[in-house]
Amino acid sequence: MFFKELDNGKYRYYEKFYHEREEKWKQVSVTLKSKSRVSQAEAKRRLALKIEKLLIAPTKEEVEKKQLEEMNFSQLLEEWKTIRSSEIKSSSYRSEVKSLELFMGIVGNLRISDYTTQLVQTYLMNLNVQNSTRKNRKIYLNGIFDYAVKVGYISDSPVKGVVIPKQKADYEKLQKAKDNFISREELGQVLSYCESHNKDKRYALAMEFIFLTGLRFAEFIGVRYQDVNFKANLLTIDHTIDYVAHGYDERILQTTKTIGSVRTIVLSERCLEIIEYFRSNCFDEEFIFVTEQGNIMRQPLLYRFIKNICEVVLGG
Image (cartoon, rainbow, N blue to C red; front, side, top):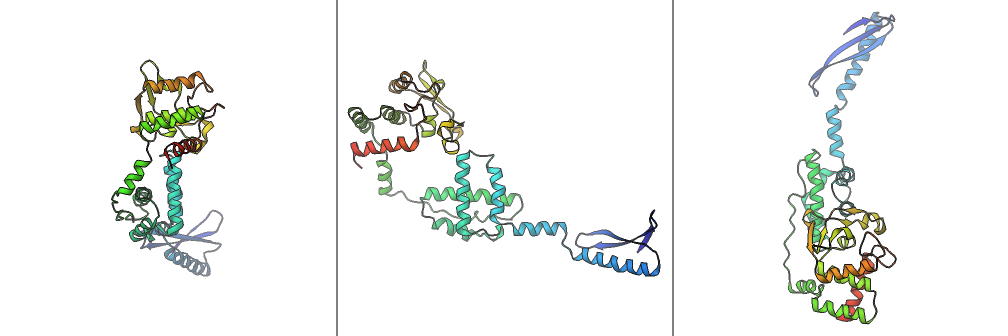
């Protein structure tokens, strides 16, 4: 121990010690009014207490390590949400977050290190969903736990060893998939019924246009007059309307689902006739497929129209 006299007449006592866990020398100090033997003895006592307290206190690295060990899934999810919200579309983001919250609700908000491959495997296999949905849920879990590995929260991902069995396509499933589609001949029957029974012409033409082009609904409602090259009979698909996050009539455009979805479609004469009908009966200067009120068509209403007409004409 040594001491120095300060400008104010007091004395500062110092003691050096070696911190084995931090592997470095450190120093503590106390300030007293005197350098008497009694003061020096008191300084030694106080310095010893300070050193003892520092030696038993967790180091910065130990505190950080403990925090990592105690991190639970909800804390990890908050970090992951910040990253994913800037990476993917809002509709995809909500689906992913909802899936991860469901996982946490069923399996529990455990410490990240407590999740095991067996827990994840059991969770996925107990879901009452189609195998394709089960695979998507695994992809979401794989993403968040891979992130935890990369930033050093855990050493291995519990999803890494999870196995989703391949599923055979049986006859009934193939038949069910087939029944969800209608042939060109059946479409003709449906359209004839719509015309003879004075059904909503704009919905009927919308149904026909979707059938002829194969557009996804979000692509369909996003078609604008400027997207159509009337001279070359071409339609450019490079955006959709994000009606899930922002509502239909906000008309917020976003890129297509994937880069591969950006494409140019050759329009048949019939497609051009349909577009011409909407242009001649125009209720919106920008978007083609709107209702008589000038509103963007709603998916539930259009799909219900299609479903009801098809059931009447083709049978339920």
